[in-house]
Picture 1 (cartoon, helix red, strand yellow):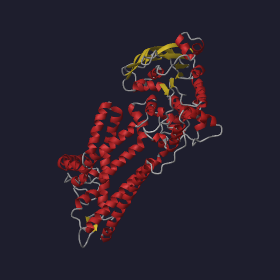
Picture 2: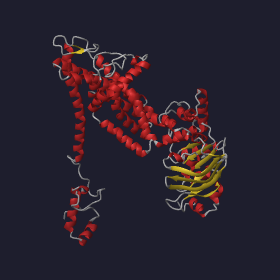
Picture 3: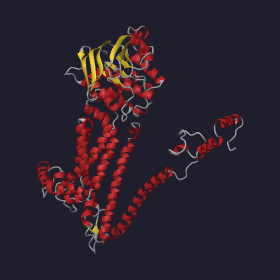
Picture 4: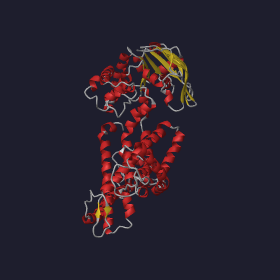
Length: 366
Length: 258
């Protein structure tokens, strides 16, 4: 008899064998021990999930470990890609920078293709990149926050959903379309606006130039602003909507108007998210290539003026110059890409530092 | 510094749903009035219509007449923010502003009212925190985040925030339901001190609490889910709990219903 016999259970066992064919009962019991029953599907007898019988051994190659390896691998790939890109950039950039007859960091002009006397420097391009992006943010962020607040706290729900959809649609327009539109249609209004700005606000250094106007930093920044708008809007709208209702009620119950409530509860609560959304917008503006290649006038001038023809950026310069560049020229452009990478890195670190500084107050909010 | 509240036929809706129907009662100054009743009977809705917080929700509206010292708070030319400044509120869950320090939380209402002078704010902050029995625990760390306090301290911070603007009436919507018994006791002690100065209306699910802290008790009830809540009985607390005149009240307080 293969049935396990425990001291004192002999009576029960013999009682069971009297009722039913003994072998069959034993078979069932053994199977219950070998197979974890909740995995046996429709076959076999169904036992409660909680078990009964001995605990099944751990599986060695279950979905659990496969998935863990998969996610770990995916995470590692990111690291590998970043390192590979960095190595590629540095390997290509170093020979070009060595061949540079000027100081790469401080020289303004960009003539790396001269076979005998390659001279190029990042100063003007880096300035143009940061300057145009900063102006784009100055133009876009107030409007974006206004739209976001309108959608999250003022507009009727149905209208807000429709408008939010339109904003998201704006984010999906390819940047070449924005660039062409800016170059062909926006350039004339900007030219007139530049003249007007110079006439009445010429004493501000930004509007000091007396022409020619048109394909200027102002045009590029306007196009950038429109491109940045949807990102900042939809992210900050989500951030504003996360404000706990009980904090909004607390402000209202203290006698706050809606705007005061937004200033007391909504904006402070969402500040880290707002900074993140602005930084993402800045990231897009810094890296934007084709729209700026089409709208900026080019050249190496550095100044506070935004309405005079001209302006350049690192990414636009790469797009415009890569096709006809020789070996050193390409290396130089890649070196400029490395600088762009560094700029965005610094911007992100500053943003994180700002968020981190308020962590005590924000952390307890969540 | 305390005012008399009179409700005449107050009916409140959430969209098409009628939440309370024809509530009429008079609340005397410098007293504690408890609103009790089963869940969904409209006590919180009635409380929120007293400082016009009900209408904050989309589609919500109030009919009938509510006066504070015979001034109609729902009159067309009344500034809703002035009503809410006069009638402070403490909520069910402690809700200090998470991004503000203890100090900033307490003086938030004063700053809204345009008080800027540091000395005035400092004095008001200390006074309100002392009145809320919180000063001794927090006075060394006023610039720390308010949300870093314990639940009971947070709720007393919210009470301090509500009374810092020196309102006439303080509404409390189940102020102890998220707190442990010791914090609850601290709040109840505070309520009996505050009633020397303010008119207090408190919604509670805890009948012992109603019996302990209130002078008068109003019992709300509904016939069945989906019906509007009605005021069943309103009398001295002692009478409600020992000798209620309505059978429904007796059933509820003895635990046979709801």
